[in-house]
Structure formats: C-alpha cells, structure tokens
Length: 78
View (cartoon, rainbow, N blue to C red):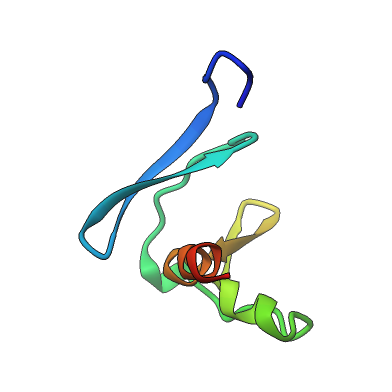
C-alpha cells in the first residue's frame, strides 16, 4: 500500500466479521469446483502445511490454495 492508502485488498467474511488482506498483486481470479482441489504437495512441511488447503491445476499451472481461516488465525494469534 502506498502513502496514499491505495492498494489491492481481498475482502472476505471470517468468523462472522468482514475482514481484508492487503496484497501486492493479483494475477488472475479463478472460480473452480471443490472437486478440482488436490491434496497439497508432500514437500510442504511443518507450520506451512497448515496454511495450504491444497492445490489446483489450471491449464499448465499448479496453483497452491491458501487455507484462509488458518492464515488469518496465524496472523492474529502469531
């Protein structure tokens, strides 16, 4: 976010509260059925594993899907 207060925000509902995450960039937005979600790569270990819900294949790309609840909980609780 620059000094003017502009930037990209991802707005979502978390535990009944409206919340936002500031992000540097958004390349693309996908709407995919839950059935396309694959388990996360086994090479992800430790606390990082809790942050990844799984992965999806889109065209020739493998994209990690963030477990939003765990990420937000980690940010607020440390």
